[in-house]
Image (cartoon, rainbow, N blue to C red; front, top):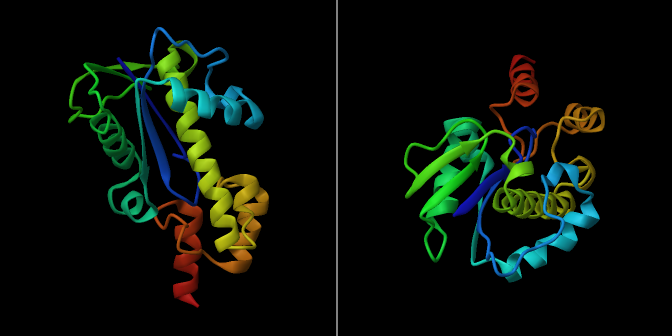
Length: 190
C-alpha cells in the first residue's frame, strides 16, 4: 500500500515534487504527520528515517515547462502516476492525498481528503516531497540570486512579488501562473 502526496502546487516558481512511499509495518516511524504541520527541522529529521526504513519510495520532479504546458492539475496527476510507477516493489494500491485520482495509475487507487494527516504512508510521502522541493529551491536561490527562493520557496509572498517586478521572471518562474503571466504580458506591451 503506497501513500502519495505532492509539494509545490501553488508556488510561482520551481518544480512540483511528488512522492510515493510504501512503509514497512515492522519498522514504524514516530512523528509522521502532514508536512505542513511539521517544522523544517522535524521534516529534515524524518526524511532520512523514511528513506532508510521504507520498503520503497520514489520522488518525481515535474519541471516548470511541463507545468506550463499541461497545467498544474494535469502535471500533478502525471507526477502521481510516475511516482507510483517508480516504486520497486510495485504497490498493489495507492492512497492519494486529495479528492482526485490520476486516470492512469498502475494499480488501484483511493483518494483520501486530508490523507496527509490521517495515513502514515501519505504523511511520509508529504515529507519526502516537501523536503526534496525545499532543498531544490535553496539550490535554485544560489543560481538565481535576488528572488529569495531559499526563504519563500517560490510562493507568492510580498518579497517574492517585489523581486519578480524588479528582476522580471527567471527560467524557473511558471509562465502560466497569473502574476508571472501578467508581468510578461506587460513587458510585451511596452
